[in-house]
Image (cartoon, rainbow, N blue to C red):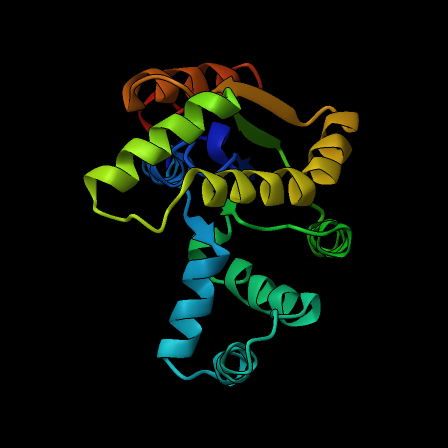
Length: 204
């Protein structure tokens, strides 16, 4: 970790399926010297390592149920308490509900911290659908139909709409055009974060 500009860079990234969120999350983490923390990765790591929380998650998922907010919050609290997240983090896939937003606010406030910014990748829905359809065909995934892809877009909008509105009201939202090459989108992310005084490690 280098430079004061990175101290406390606490970020979220949101974006529809197919907008390249995972790719950009990894790039931000590397460039800004903060860990990318995906709830899916946390679930898998805890299940694999058979931690007490992981065993709970495994049992819930085996029963075909959703992991409740309370358990997801515990996993996030544990992960944000680890040494590599002390000087900032990038959350991907969390928070997803109003209760999770409130928990994260409370968790950070308890440390005298708050979110720095929320990066929102935005992209034309039809272009994303077309991109994902092409990818499915190239990879031979005939079950990934246009209907299925559009359904995932609907779920994303339903889940994240209220959260985006909330963070927008707080003035935390940074809208970034998610269409284009990885480098083009990454440059836009850098520009957006720079507007909040958050710069890559090499520039800090």
